[in-house]
Length: 503
Image 1 (cartoon, rainbow, N blue to C red):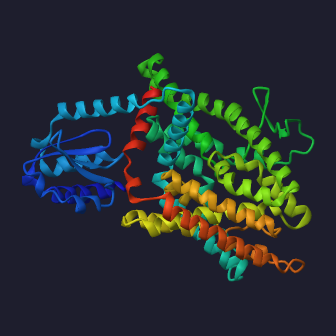
Image 2: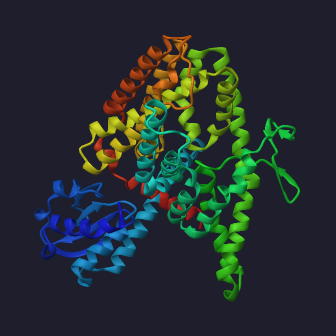
């Protein structure tokens, strides 16, 4: 929800609760506006619940409060409500107490057994990832759609010459958000995790700096390696691996998390006269060092192991490989672990002109788009429908991030139902021996499946793509989503507990 929308949203909420004359007091907790109304019967719950930015509304009889679920933007909306109603409705003590009680309630929900902690930690991680991505989802969707149309106009229809400056400029428009994703996500993740956004964005800038990208892109022939990972750089004499950090989000989210305790510690130990310069300097140096020397190489090592397993599956049994890849490949994308799979695809196409692996991965993109389309069809919330439809279009254009981070992961069952669809679709494709003769995938990448030597391959793509789309769509529509899932209370509470844990 954009900042400029808070004023209108506040006005609509005030109108929905019966107007300014019906409001006695208004407070908030960490997720909800809480109105004390003179006559609660004047509140129009259906009208309020349908407002963009509102996840639900209910009258709490026990507390005598009319509560409106906003989510992370609750304080911004509250400020606009107060600005329009006047300070006479403010009760700071009650607000502070409500916030404290909500946080305490969140703390009580901590798990009590090892499996519970694993589930809890995973939920916190997913909540942090989606929360960091939400502010830029619209831009990602727009960029994905633009890239899809550019591919269509260039490689499919031949309307734009790939060597022309027109192509170069439009490609830059579509690609810049993804290329500089660590900077954008660094800023949004830092705001969510209460570290310094500018410093973390600068750390993201280090990761995508041209000289760092050049190290990752350079030839690794003759370079020493560790478990198959080329040690393509040194840091104070320590051999390390520098991967390509463009398009990645996990390393910079880790950086945003680490920057808070590091920055707080520096704030305590540095003299006030030196703090403004040396706190961001040391935070930048320390956190970047940890990311490039430890986090990045560890992710690459895990990714290499997974790539070896995937390669073994593809060469052993294409149908079983399709089932496994279809079910779990997008999980690798979430954590940036898919990057060591890309060289396998590139090597296949460079040496043989085709890639079975890329053909199977293709259906995971279609499935995530179809999952978002299922939410679009099921939801009655206009703002959610718009976001879901844009995510679906982007997914069908070969860019899954808007669908995944904006919709599917946020409402977890959507992601898994879509993954079931991709598993079924990729299994079907593997059973019929799919192959792929280019890089561009999803529905818009259909030309990559034409082959003179294998004329049936395009029909395998069409059949498996329809299976993927239909299964994903129906699974999400019937079992993966309902509008009640939009209630963000649980996710917001988890985020606040996570923030407390890193104090």
